[in-house]
Image 1 (cartoon, rainbow, N blue to C red):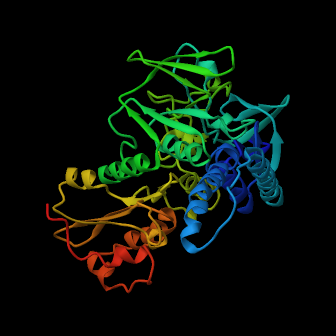
Image 2: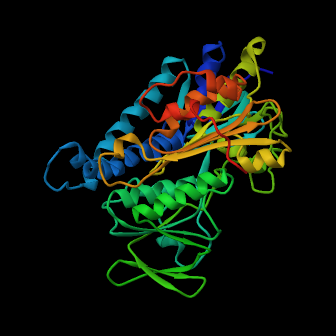
Image 3: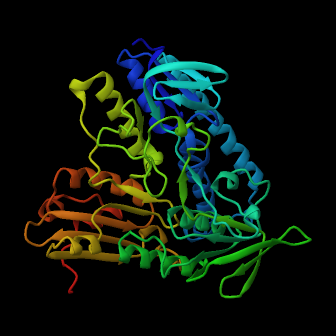
Length: 452
C-alpha cells in the first residue's frame, strides 16, 4: 500500500519536532501539523517564558544585595508590561526558529487542527493525508478542578499574558509549577500565598529538599498554607476575587493561579476512529517503542504521561525517528538517572534516588549533607542557605542520588548527572579537586556522613 507520507506528526512541540526533522533527515517523507504555536508548551507557555520570569523575579533580590557590595542606586521600579513584551518578542523569534528547523529539514508543515480518520489517515484544513505511521505528540493542558467559579481561575496558559501584575495572588498546587510561580509572583512584588491540600509541597522529591525549600520560602515571606483547598471562587464588583476554602475561611485576592496538574491534550483528535487504548488517567498507552495498541499510531511526550520533561520528549522523538527510519542506530530511552530542576527561588536541582527511595529499595546508606550561606550573601545580613545532599550506598560506595537547593542548582546538577550516569562512587567525588571558591566544590568536599 502506498502512502502520501512515511510519517505524519500531530503536534509541533519539542518531541514532535525532533521526531519529524530527524526522520526527514533520515530520508523519510514527513509532514507535521500544529494547531496553536510552534515549539509547543515548553517554548510558548512553559519552560522558556517561565525561566524569563524567574530571572526577572530574582532581580529584586539582586538589587537588595547590591548595597553590600558598595552599590547605591535609587529604588528599583518594575514594569510588568516591559517584561512581557520582551518575552513575547523572544518567543516569536523561537517560533520562527522552529519553523526553520522543520522547513529546512524538508518537513511539510501544516498549520491547523489535525484529526485521525483511521489508522493511516489524517484530515487537516479539509485535506486528507495518508501516512504509513502517525505520531501523536500533542502534549498536555492545565486542568482546574470543577468548582463553582473555576472560570475565574488563571493557569500557566494565561499567566504569561496577563495585562498587569496582580497585587495579590493565591497559588494553588504543590508541584513544581506551583512553587515556581509562587517564587515569580512574590519576587516581582505581589502579595503571594501558596495553598496546597497536602502536608508539604513537591511530593516525590527528597524530603530534606522539600523541607529546606519550605524554610526558605518562609524566610522570604511567602505565605504557605498547607492542608488547604479552595471550594469556590467568586468575582467581586471591583473585579477582585474571593476564594472560599473548604475549611470555611474566605480569602480576598486579585488572581487565583491554579497549578494542580495537567491532562493529556487529546481533544477532538479523532481517537474514536481508531483502536488506541488509554490508561486510567486518559494518557495514551504505548509499548517500549512508543507504539499504541494501533501499531501504525505512535505517541510520545506528555501525552503518554511517562516523564513529563522537555529533554525526555526530545529523547523519545529521537528514538522514534531512529527506530522507524534508521533502525541500525536505534537505542531505547533510558529513564534512569534523569536530572531535573525546579526554578523556584532558590532553585532545586536533583538527579538519582531520594533518601526515601533508596531506603525503600533496601540500600544501606551513608548520607552526606551540608547547609551553608552562599559566599555572595556573606557581606550582608542575608539568611538564605544552600543545601546539598549526597545519597551513597554504604556497601558499594556508589552515589545513588544528588540533591541541591540554592543558586544555579540546575547548572550544577547537570554536570553531576554525567558523573552518576558514569557510575561514580563517593571516592571519585572525594578524589575530584574542587573549583574554589564556588558552591559546587562542596559536593567534592563532603567528608563526614550524617550521624543517623
